[in-house]
Amino acid sequence: MDKRKKTNSALQKRLIYEKMVSDISRCAVEIPVCNKFLEKTLEILAVVVDVSRIYLFEYDYSDNTMSNTFEWVAPGIESQKNNLQHIPTSGLTWWMSHMFDGRVISYHDVDDIPSLTEREILKSQQIRSILVVPFFVQGRFYGFMGFDECRQIREWSSENINILSIVVNIISSAIERRRAEELMRSSEEKYRYLFENIQDVYYEVNFEGVILEISPSVKLVSGYTREELIGKRLDGIYYYPEKRDEFLQEISGKGHVMDYEVTLKDKDGSPVYVSLTSKLINRVQNSRPHIIGSLRDISERKKTENELIEHRINLERLVEERTSEVQKTNQQLQKEIREREIVKNALRLEKDQVRRMNEELIRANSELKSLDEMKNNFLSNVTHELKTPLVAMKGFASMLYSGRSGELSCDQREHVEIILRNTDRLVTLIDSLIDFSAITSGREKYEFVHFDLLDIAKESVSLVRSKFGVMEKEIIFVEDYQVSSLEVQADPYKIQQVFINLIDNAAKFSPQKGRIWISVRRPDREKAEVQVRDEGIGIPEEHIDKVFGNFYQVDSSSTRRHKGMGIGLPICRGIIQRHGGQIHAQSEAGNGTTFTFTVPLKHNL
Image (cartoon, one colour):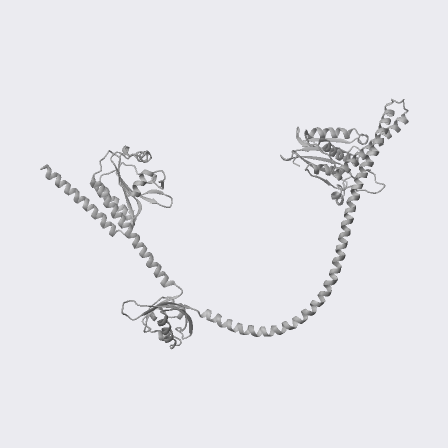
């Protein structure tokens, strides 16, 4: 009795499985949309197979990932579909080797899976038992279908594996069939689109000239619709019907024609020029041959050809006319050529004169360079020779003034004081000439060291402040140092010379009790900036660009009020340029002058 029950139970189970397979097969045929079919398949499986999850994964060859595309889960079981999208397969070697080889993965306990990576992924989804069958479409791996059991450890029976394998085969076949149907439908649509929209006219006629098929585009060429022409003879649309026989002889002899020109007649009876490309074919063995091909409207081309012929005739006429004109022009050109030869000879003589003048200029320039060097050497020697006796004169005058050679009367002290002041002035002028000579000749030596620019600024102000002229004018110095210290890499003696020249120059042109501003700041990380501003007579606008020229004086008359040789500012310019900085002046006549120069913080020359 128990055996009979088991047999009946197995038979009923088998019938249920067979009905399930039959239902899935019917759905594969009846449901045209692939996604709907796959969703229905999972629903049918879920009714029969008692599992936690049923799912379908698809493999993406473009980026070697897999995604859960369809899923059914039992009540109380968590869905994993959203978590399993575009999973990289590069680290799932064990799993993917089974899939690509077409091997079933069946484990009643996922702890027995040999690969740690796959085992941990499955356990993270609370899977305890798993059954997976790969499937292929047109011989290429497409994906896999599987059962998950999350509630208990479960043995997968051979029936479970067979059911899943059968369903996978049904799905593969359904996908292949739908792909084939879609490809055929696409091909048909493509052919229909080309047939209905191609600009050239496709046609098919029998050997007797009856039109069997023709594309709708014929209306654009002839004005006839497709329906008006099918079944009619070609003779009715040939503009020259006798040309039909010539066409048949041509195609019969060769089996095909290319770019064969024919004149047809449109619906209004007007000629239409077309080009035929046709071929003889036999649709059925022993049947009369048919002709298929295409025709293209070449009316515009023929019109262009006719216009070209007319244009060629006109061109030939124009060539004859122009030939006569060219002959006349050629005679005129020959005359002009002879005249140009005369001019060319004259120009050659002028060129020789220019060349000689250039040579003379080169010699003169060389002599000027020589003279300039002689001038620099002379200036250097003379200034040194003049400075030697002046040093002795200053020494003896200082002894007299100090009283070491005997007491002097008030008048005598005043006279000696004048001697000392003028001696200092001469020494200063001679030192300036020496510096100017060294700078212009390129012999000036520079020693770049690190020092605080503020120390040089303060010392320079102190030195100028002690001068007699400045003391007599009661000049007021305003020192504006916007930094507490500012270290630069430069020649301190040369930089101090620039300070003294600019401050002394400002004092010289300042009025009684005038003010002079000296500011030092650091505008950026690369350089220091110094400004010397006065309230003096200023510089007219037309002289601003010239004040740094050698020996230039704004007032060059012999009766000028302010003395000087015009080399102080050129010396300043040479020193600042040698340091890689810049110097310029801003002024307005009667409103003072501001000199600004910059010094790079680091010497890079």
